[in-house]
Structure formats: C-alpha cells, structure tokens
Image 1 (cartoon, rainbow, N blue to C red):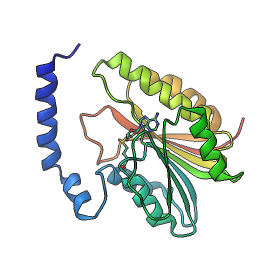
Image 2 (cartoon, rainbow, N blue to C red):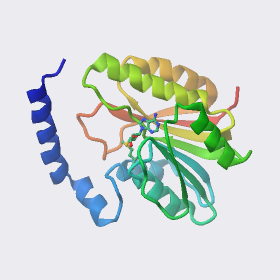
Image 3 (cartoon, protein in one colour):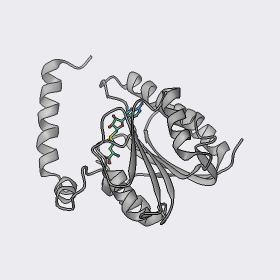
Image 4 (cartoon, rainbow, N blue to C red):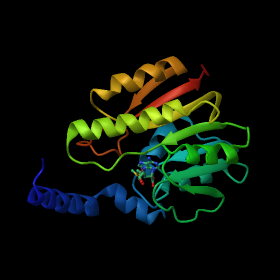
Length: 211
Ligand code: SAM
C-alpha cells in the first residue's frame, strides 16, 4: 500500500510536471479544457475518424476537451453526446449526460437520445480513479472496458468505429479478445501527447460487425 507521504510527494511532482508541460500550455492557449485533446487530434489526423455530420458518443468526457474538438469537426449537423460521472460545463451543440456509464439507466438515456439511429463512432477516455495498487486498477479498468464493449449493440452502427483508452497489463488479453471478434481490425496507438511513463494507450477498433 503506498504511504501518505509518498503519495503527497508524487502528487507534488505531478503538479510541477503538469505546469511545465508543453501540451498543457498549448491547450490553454487554444481554449481547450485539457491536454488530452492532443491525443485525440493526433489519432484523428492519422486515421480520419471524425467526419462532418457524424454522430459520436464521448465517454468519460469531463472536463470536455474531446467533445470541444469533436463538435468543431462534426459541425452543426453532427450529434455529440458527452457522458461523465462529473459535470461537464456546457459546450454548444453537445448533449451532456451526467452519470455512471455502467449504470443501465444511463445507457438507456443514451439510446433514447440516439432514437434508433446508432452512432458512427464511440470514443472513450474513461479511466477509474487510480488507487496505486496495480491489480485493483487493472480490475477496475477491465470492468469499465467490458461494460463499454457489452453495450455497443444499438449504440454503434454496423461498420462504425470505437476508440478506447486501455492500460498495459494482463487485462489487455481479455479486452482484445471480444474486440477482435466484433471488429474487422484492432490497432494499438500510443499518441505522442500521452505521457511516456503512463501505462495508458488507445485501441482503435475499426468496422463494427454486430454479433
Ligand atoms: N477526454 C476528457 C477530456 O478531454 O476532457 C478527459 C477524460 S478524463 C481522463 C477521464 C474521465 O472518465 C473522468 O472525468 C472520469 O470522471 C470519467 N469516468 C470514469 N469512470 C466513468 C464512468 N463509469 N462513467 C462515466 N465517466 C467515467
């Protein structure tokens, strides 16, 4: 179990690194709410995920930088639904749902908004609160990811794509297995804006084929 003084020291080091971070400064200057936007931008520039007029569900959206980027790219005709446990300050033309994505009522709310027209893309930057205990963090992340994968039917249209944050580790095998069955291709991506020491990376699953 990490000691309190270790945690305090680590959090101070994180704050110092964060303030000096080039992406944090760039996000502030361009009006984005978080540096995470540059991970999505880099992936989008490479794989052309976000198209004008698209319908997109953004999971783990707070504070909102991915939704800010997405609505700029989809334009007025796009439909963007942002979901988070935390409040997301209003973003023009983005529909915000506050709640736990794993809750069946929240998934019903998303389906209600989609109104029988599934999305072109689901993006998930969701991550559980980290405890620092690797086995627990892996299990919580796996639970979250399996929830997303099991809810895709009706949310995602056939041929659509999924971009999802994952952590390196043993759970990856369990997560990749269903994705390989449900999608034509699964690509691993570590964007330049993702901190080098972080275990996070992204899986882009292309071409949803319903069960
Ligand atoms: N992509 C966001 C942005 O660019 O502003 C940053 C997302 S942040 C790294 C991860 C978010 O996932 C947190 O705001 C957290 O509240 C959310 N989250 C974690 N578990 C969740 C769950 N079960 N349902 C909804 N949101 C969740």
